[in-house]
Each structure stands twice: as structure tokens, then as C-alpha cells.
Image 1 (spheres, helix red, strand yellow):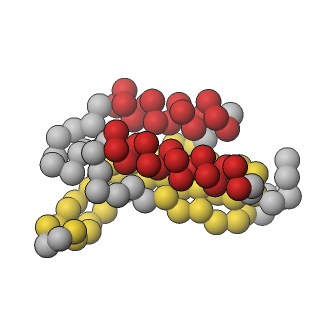
Image 2 (cartoon, helix red, strand yellow; image 1 turned 60 degrees about the vertical axis):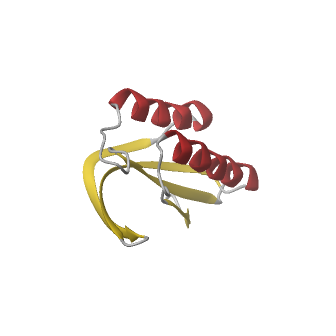
Image 3 (tube, helix red, strand yellow; image 1 turned 90 degrees about the horizontal axis):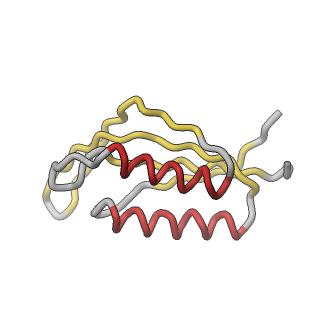
Length: 106
């Protein structure tokens, strides 16, 4: 494993912005896509609540978190940006949060 690793944290909503529930099957596909690409991922099913405003509307999100530790290379960063774009559209979201940072694994 490379000494340069990057952790990506992907928050996935459990509801569409209009309040309809997103099926667990669809969320499972989002998780499986990452596992298929990188071979592993961690999933935190505990609900993370998010509150944010967009154009005067207050949104309340119920979110789950996917954590992926991968080699810190441009190809992986680009794949995650593309993933964000695909799932933002599929899940009909105004935005999807994707955080990344360098990590050291001992």
C-alpha cells in the first residue's frame, strides 16, 4: 500500500430534497460501486442530521456516511469527483458533500 493515502467521506442522503424516501436498494448500489472500484469501503448507517439553506429554503437531511481510504493519486480523486456528479444527478440532489484529506495508517 502506498505511503500516501487519502480518505474520502461521502455523505449519502436517505431522502430526496422534496422529502421522498430514497430506496435502500439504490443506496446499496452507490456503496457497491465504490467497493467494486476500490475493493473496500466502510459504511456508517447511523443517521447524521444535516441542516442547510438554499435560496431561502431550509433543508433537513438524514444522511449516511461512506468512508474510503485509497492511494492518493489524481486518478482516484477524479473518479470520486465523477462519482459525486453521477450520484448527485441520480439522487436528485442540489449538492452532495464529498470531503477528502490525507491520512497516515500505522
